[in-house]
Length: 285
Ligand code: C2E
Ligand code: MG
Ligand code: MG
Ligand code: MG
Image (cartoon, rainbow, N blue to C red):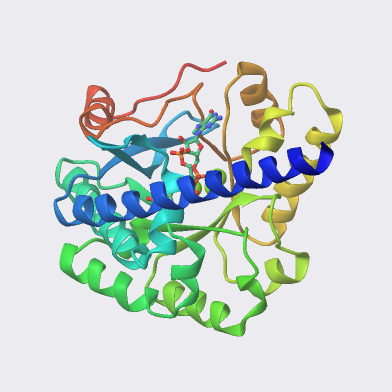
């Protein structure tokens, strides 16, 4: 009986795998068309200076609602793109759209605004990124210092010297680099010492525990002073509660983003937020 049921389970598991693979294959076909037909959308979430409440930057976040597949999460989108050789085009599309939009906002009088663009790790590693970024900066005429690329530490890419070269090339273009989801991945102190990074983004899991766990407070405190001593700025992700915001302000965290302050939103809403008030500020806690 046990053997029989295990066999059933294996079959169920395998057919589950097939279904998933099939879904991904269909997704990949639709995704390719969506990229070509500009059906993907970027939403933007503001990143605030926690001391003054002013906006520093906006993070571009991919959104896709497909007629066939419904709403597909960006993480699944990225995974599908990577598995089916679409990662380059997807990342280039995001980069170009985000830079074009930032240019429009600059022309509308918000010249101080920056944009943060997420880049998939394997794109980051292939060495052509600097060429793409240079091209996009040239085509859009954007001031390089207003572009921030976010890379996750959730990869072993840090073991290759090539990554350091890529980072250096990117920095030479005048853009900034942020290490995303800091604290959850593979970065070590020696990476932090070697890599020319400008910003650390504290992963939201640490921020979530801030109001309940004294150890999370200690860790965040340590990350902030570590970043300061390495001349990097710190952004806290995933601020959902006033207590978390207050705690981060107390600890001297410079920048923050999260549902409490503002959710990711469509371009039009972001434009409204920017123009409603030149000095838009979140409600201070
Ligand atoms: P990420 O870069 O760490 O982005 C932050 C994620 O946290 C976003 O999820 C955002 O919507 C969400 N978030 C913001 N505030 C809060 C909060 O207060 N609480 C919680 N629980 N979540 C919050 P999203 O948009 O679903 O994106 C997930 C991940 O997908 C991103 O994580 C990033 O790694 C990847 N991603 C999104 N857009 C792109 C893209 O254009 N290109 C690439 N390569 N990756 C992308
Ligand atoms: Mg990010
Ligand atoms: Mg993150
Ligand atoms: Mg992430």
